[in-house]
Amino acid sequence: MIREGRPEDARPLAELVGRAHLHAVGRPADEGVDELEELWAARLGGGARVWVWDQNDVVSGVVALAGRDVVSLCVDPTAQGAGVGAALHELVLTELGEGEARLMAPAESDQSRVFLGERGWREEPEGSGTYVR
Image 1 (cartoon, helix red, strand yellow):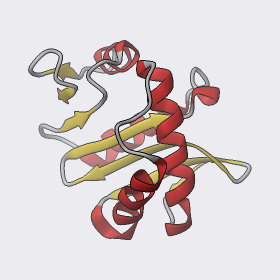
Image 2 (image 1 turned 45 degrees about the vertical axis):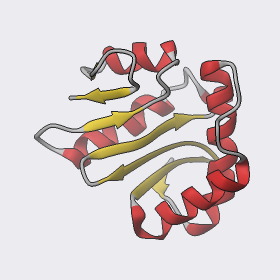
Image 3 (image 1 turned 60 degrees about the vertical axis):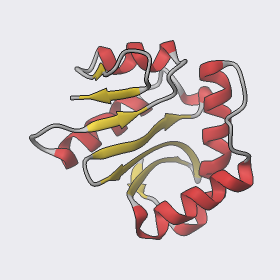
Image 4 (image 1 turned 120 degrees about the horizontal axis):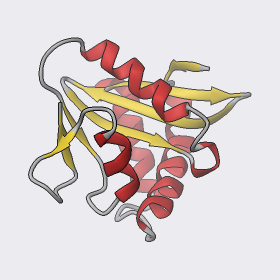
């Protein structure tokens, strides 16, 4: 189920993002889990609008929106292929409404490039990890 993110989600989100980044690009994220937890605490504290996919009290996906920028769309590797990312993506498109938006993803992630390309996002400039729609 999708719900709004809560402050206590900061650590689970940091861990999820770390696992997903490693899965997507084959190396750990530049930031450690503690740094990522601080980032998510800031986002959850008002720096962004955050929604999570909560399956039996386990956070397995997240989407975060700061203004017109999708600053995170991430799914735990164990939940990929189950429609979690698609559901979070649809939610954020509804929230965005009309107009241009940006989305950031790891530049090295072919998986992100395919997922986003199939949904109308284009990488600009190519290889940058910044997508527009």
